[in-house]
Length: 202
Image 1 (cartoon, rainbow, N blue to C red):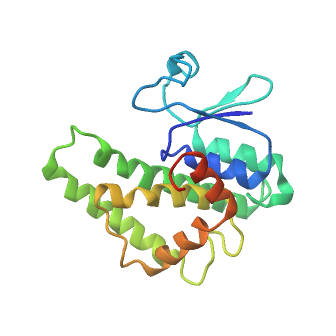
Image 2 (tube, rainbow, N blue to C red):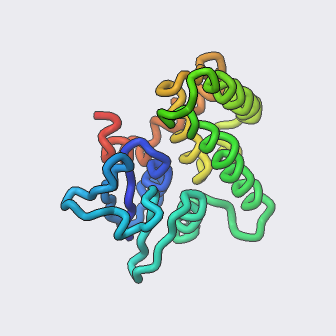
């Protein structure tokens, strides 16, 4: 498999999951600012949408949405318990978390990363994100991970989007459960390996 990623972007989520899975893969940097690969290839010729992540399977088929990619990876290694079994209530809870993180959190950050967003509009976006994150903080009370004691692909996604808080002025210092959770997830070998590979930590 080949994972196209941009350092620190949402593609860090499947990058983490691939390391957690133990599956063989190649990670290829496709910076979102230049859309050029290291060899000069125009990334749009590989993925016409131009964004990351993009996972190319060994048979040439591809997936280009993070929540679908991480579930695909998890289902290749069921013994790793990165996702509950298909058809179970727990799997739908996982999908609920992936949807919430994608629509309520991930997309909530987008205006804060967009240079053309008016400065006077940003406080409203920040307030909305903080209210959502406060709810997540409550959901994490008494839990190691979003689904309980087991790390899942949803944790990789939440960890990545909460990484962005400091860059755009979303203060989560008062959310003790999220702070403890981020430390717990950030210490996992698979998370450390992916972040090192992307040059985010030494």
